[in-house]
Amino acid sequence: MKKHSFIQPANRREFLGKVTGAAALVGVTGLMNPARAHETKHSVSFSADDPDEWFKGLRGKHRLAFDCTEPKEIFPFAWPKVFMMTNIESGASDKDCSAVVVFRHNAFLYALQDSLWAKYKLGEMQKVNDPETKTFALRNPFWKPKPDDFSAPGLGVVQLGISDLQASGVMFCTCDVALTVFSAVIAMNTKQQAADVKKEFLAGLIPGIPAMPSGVWAVGRAQEHGCGYCYV
Image (cartoon, rainbow, N blue to C red; front, side, top):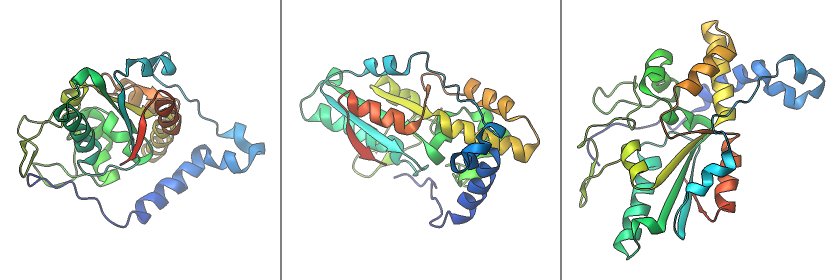
C-alpha cells in the first residue's frame, strides 16, 4: 500500500483498561449487579428508524458481512472493496453483490464525521494515525480521502473512501451500544452529560451509516439476511 501509517499498537491493554474501568463507572457494573442497574442506566437510542428494514437494501446473491471490532488499518475498507471487485471480475454484476460492514466495539469511530474526531481526539483514543501528518488523526481518514490516497502494488490507485464504497454497494452501520459506552466515557472525562455527548455522536454519524441496536445484533441480522461472515 501507499506509504500511509495506519499502524495500531500491538499492546492495547493500557487503553482498554482505562475504557473498561471508565465504562464500569457509567453502567457496565449494572450487568454484574442487577440491584444497582437502575442507578447508572443509559438509554440506547439507535438512529435507524427500522433496523430490520435497513437490511432489505441488500442486493443479489453474493452477500458478505464484515465484522469490524477494531480500527484495523485499511482492512475494514480494503476487504469489502476486494470482495466487490473480485466478484465482478469473476462474472457477477454489481447488482449481484452486497457487503455489510459493521463498525462495533473500538471501531465505532469510523462511523463518525471529522468534527468529532477533532473535538474528542478519537484518533489518539484509538491510536489511529493520519496518512498525511503521520500523527494521531484529527479526522476520519476514510470519510473524505483524496482520490489517490490509497494504492496497492499491482493494483494501482484504489478507491477506499466510505462514499466510494457505498456507491459500489457496500453498506455500513455501527453499534449503538459502543456509541453509548464511549460517549459516556468521554462525557465523564470532559465533565459533560453523557446524554449530550451521545446526542452529538448520533448527529455526527456519516450519512448513510445508521446506528443499529448493537453491533452483534447487526452481525446476526446480516447473516439472517443471507450474508456470509468475515472477521476483520
